[in-house]
Image (tube, rainbow, N blue to C red):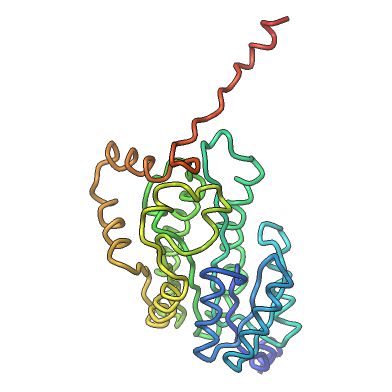
Length: 291
């Protein structure tokens, strides 16, 4: 037996879950642990991660570990790999859940936040999958669960970058699911609708109509469905009749109606529900003309 194969066989399996301190990530960590998986939790808040790992160990009697890292950083993947190695683990299941959102008129959004949105939502997902998928294929077992969004099926004014990363994640997941057919490995994508989480407020969209008027699903419900259907190998997981309806309509409704409707629902609003107008931009030649 070659040394690399022997080393792999001495390691123990674990589910790696990104963005595991709250919301869907935390619920998915509980779901995997409840079903007997050891878990490696990742996120930026090391103290909250450690608390979550302690709670999971106590509740489900499985090994639970944590590694603090910012997925927007280029070395995040290496830190997670080292943390697994230090604990004698290998990644059996990878849950790419971590995400961030920016809302508002695109040209007013912080450029660094926009780039970080792409890094966290998409680049880190591809990086981690590339790191762990080859070993899954070599073992002939395991899987990748990517958490996208119903927004990925739509053009979404005022959340254009966030929705674009989720659209890319859907396309990439579907293509990768085909590539791994017959290997014993599954690649699945879950697309939640509006979830009871603080991502909307963090992105500045807490008063948008979609966040205040559409029904919200609990992280626990979407996580239970995602885990169950992930284990069944479903490529695309969409829970709830409303979410399925939105996705179906997005395929057939013409853009001249779909995009304005989406813009109305997703426009950033103040506390009284009035859409926030963009600040006037000064023409670049205006200062020169004043001299």
